[in-house]
Length: 116
Image (cartoon, rainbow, N blue to C red; front, side, top):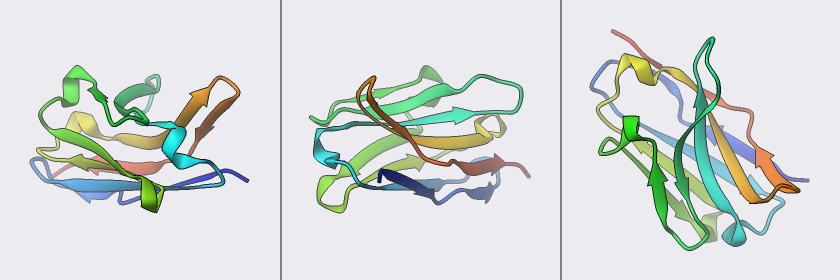
């Protein structure tokens, strides 16, 4: 049974930081590309950051220079360090594990709220 469990969300003031974690189980973690997506109320889910199974990273323009994605394969965990948070970063953040269209898994999401 595949599980992706996100943690680390919460309420933070503008300019603050949060680190999200996603612990994976039930998959061969090291061969999966991992990603973080977010969905704000009334908006479509969008890609935030990706890290390939080889460690290459890709970021949405809106978060470049502020967010950092990383992975620790031995811990089967992917992280998203979020700095200089803005109110427009408020969303539910989802972890994704992708190998192919048949092997594409999602976590349950964690709420991030940026507000003073």
